[in-house]
Length: 201
Image 1 (cartoon, helix red, strand yellow):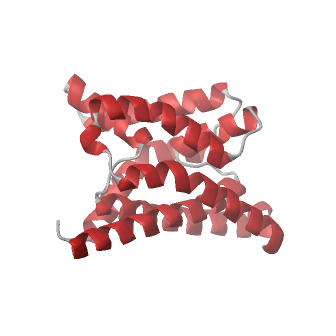
Image 2 (cartoon, one colour; image 1 turned 120 degrees about the vertical axis):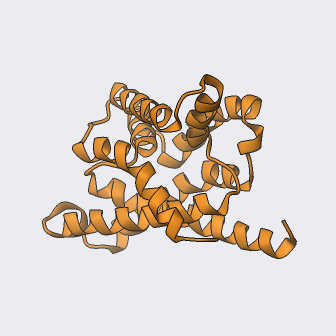
């Protein structure tokens, strides 16, 4: 990879990570449900009175250990950016939203549904940009990838099992499971793959 291609991929990765953090804050504010990683981390954050960003760093640091041992090829600049930036970007944007945006966007219909749909669609778009940059997998995403390779099982089944384990952990921490979170556990992967084919970096 030459320097110009590296800069392009790095820029796209960074935009993807920051965009994910921005629109994840809207998704969490609405409260209809989120991706399984965010559900788990948000539940743990509420249970132990931590910020979402700090919780993401702690859980990702734990999951980074097996990635460092068995999945070094999956580690890149995007791995570190995902671990450290998404949660705190979401926390910062949540603070701004609470200060400057009308509360009705997150609490009253039809604004709440509109906010959720728009934020989710944009969040998935930025996930696709991040993944297409190919600069490393987040520790949460790396676990099912490594499991699939080590156990010789189809990735989609490993991913679904991992997502539902994250849901169980979130519920054990006191999180309220929503239908949207369950739906996203089945649909985020295929949706991102579809968007990824349309977005070429």
